[in-house]
Image (tube, rainbow, N blue to C red; front, side, top):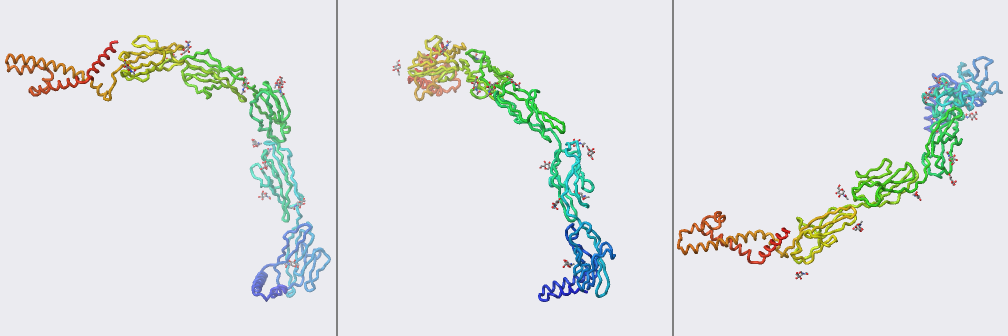
Length: 608
Ligand SMILES: *[C@@H]1O[C@H](CO)[C@@H](O)[C@H](O)[C@H]1NC(C)=O
Ligand SMILES: *[C@@H]1O[C@H](CO)[C@@H](O)[C@H](O)[C@H]1NC(C)=O
Ligand SMILES: *[C@@H]1O[C@H](CO)[C@@H](O)[C@H](O)[C@H]1NC(C)=O
Ligand SMILES: *[C@@H]1O[C@H](CO)[C@@H](O)[C@H](O)[C@H]1NC(C)=O
Ligand SMILES: *[C@@H]1O[C@H](CO)[C@@H](O)[C@H](O)[C@H]1NC(C)=O
Ligand SMILES: *[C@@H]1O[C@H](CO)[C@@H](O)[C@H](O)[C@H]1NC(C)=O
Ligand SMILES: *[C@@H]1O[C@H](CO)[C@@H](O)[C@H](O)[C@H]1NC(C)=O
Ligand SMILES: *[C@@H]1O[C@H](CO)[C@@H](O)[C@H](O)[C@H]1NC(C)=O
Ligand SMILES: *[C@@H]1O[C@H](CO)[C@@H](O)[C@H](O)[C@H]1NC(C)=O
Ligand SMILES: *[C@@H]1O[C@H](CO)[C@@H](O)[C@H](O)[C@H]1NC(C)=O
Ligand SMILES: *[C@@H]1O[C@H](CO)[C@@H](O)[C@H](O)[C@H]1NC(C)=O
Ligand SMILES: *[C@@H]1O[C@H](CO)[C@@H](O)[C@H](O)[C@H]1NC(C)=O
């Protein structure tokens, strides 16, 4: 059972296979749905808007229709809007606002709020003469005007007040939506009324400051309020003074600026040591003098909260520092082990003092003591303390350094020593060679020297003594005396000069043998005497003709050697020859003579 228009429509496009298939499918769906589905009225658009049009479409209709009759609220003659006769395609009455189309849909143009009604259509089937009906509630809404926000308190005070914002709108049946800084409200302190019309902020804080908007909505429109600026009264607090630097020099310009978190803007006053100076946030004082040192107070007050808050800064005006001066307890002569007191003299009080030694900050050691304010430096002097001293005074705006104080430390003489450096307190010098003997000490001022040779004072006053072409007479004990005429200390040291025979290339061998040579000579001499004695005895006994005495003679020969060896006569002969060889060896060159001479000289020296 299809309406003629639908049948026509479906059979209208046989020339394209695809379209045909699509159409058949669509026709089939339509007829299928038409079978059981009830007839409905669907407003298009779904909601009416004041001033706009709406079409009330009939859905679910099947079979040819004879007439459509539209009613408001109920099917009563006086509620009838229009009657439409399909065969003649005429609407009765025709000259009304509403228009019924051939498909039964009714157009209602230029809607008003009171068009919100129930609409009923009565449909009479042309074949069966049966009548069917359907109804719909058409809701007509107006386009919403922009809402406004009303605040319960135009100047809520932070942490004291609650504030309620109400969204004011003329339209009925609207829903409300709130925005804070373009975002949805959040947090415990924000409470919405059940209908969302009122937003309450409990115990407001300055953070609640911002743009508040409400949006109203109905099914056909939405409109958002202009931003409402929530103005929270707070402060003053978080006072700040800039710059924070408290130190100024005489003649500088003081330009202090005070700020506070406050709404409305705080009123500022400046006080110096409690005396009111200015009623601005800025304090400007050019060319300050010393008496501007003091406590500067910024006072900020909020005329609405009635609160006030203050912040202080202690300003210190300092004069430019003049040069300090180092004075000392000692005039000029500082002797090692003396206690020296250096004082940094300055006309300024309470200065910071820094001591410098050789242009570096002094690193005090256990011999140094600084007074509590560093003004005096006490040193138990050592020679290494000599050098230049400065003291520097400073305050946060300037510094000044004294002229240098040059400290001389007199010391010594000490560490007396000779060069060439002697071995075992003696120096050997070869006969006819030179020796430059130098005496050194550590001393300031330079020590004065004196020499003694064998305890007799010489006229020699330099620190060195030069022995040219040494002779045996140059041997002796040399004494160096060094005197410091400021410390009045004299030190002395002895040295033995030993003139020795010019050494040959094998000189070292010779000297080491000298002891052995002496022993050799002695043994040799003794052996010689024994042999001679033995010979005489032998000859004498031979004259007597007694040969039995031979062993006895032997026993009286040099005792130790004969006892150590065996009694055989061959060994005796060997020993004798050995002794003589030894003796000869020592006797042959001048070496023996020289060592003997040396020995003699040595003894002489020792006796002196
Ligand atoms: C009925 O006809 C009108 C006017 O031609 C049209 O605007 C409307 O959409 C039609 N309704 C249906 C359900 O076809
Ligand atoms: C909101 O309302 C104002 C009038 O109050 C209107 O001019 C404006 O077009 C509306 N905006 C929207 C989006 O409806
Ligand atoms: C308001 O909030 C502040 C902290 O934000 C709190 O100290 C104060 O007690 C609160 N006052 C009330 C009445 O809740
Ligand atoms: C603010 O609201 C809270 C909670 O509703 C209430 O307890 C408090 O008394 C209110 N404060 C003021 C100042 O109205
Ligand atoms: C109120 O607004 C919230 C969102 O802010 C929403 O979830 C809620 O449904 C609204 N209530 C009413 C009554 O509109
Ligand atoms: C809104 O934004 C302003 C500026 O960014 C901010 O100071 C304020 O705290 C914000 N308010 C809220 C409630 O987030
Ligand atoms: C600054 O003040 C001193 C006195 O306190 C005055 O002698 C001097 O002339 C002033 N300097 C300037 C530039 O005003
Ligand atoms: C400092 O002394 C000058 C006069 O020498 C005076 O005019 C000025 O008020 C004083 N300043 C303060 C802060 O006392
Ligand atoms: C140090 O003080 C003297 C006056 O005693 C002054 O002439 C000099 O300019 C000052 N030096 C510095 C660096 O301030
Ligand atoms: C200083 O004392 C040390 C030992 O305490 C001593 O060796 C030295 O000779 C003394 N110096 C002077 C100049 O008295
Ligand atoms: C050293 O003195 C001796 C005599 O005493 C002399 O013969 C010799 O030439 C001198 N040698 C030198 C280098 O003067
Ligand atoms: C101390 O000796 C130095 C030389 O070593 C000399 O120049 C100075 O005049 C002497 N001083 C006294 C007071 O004797």
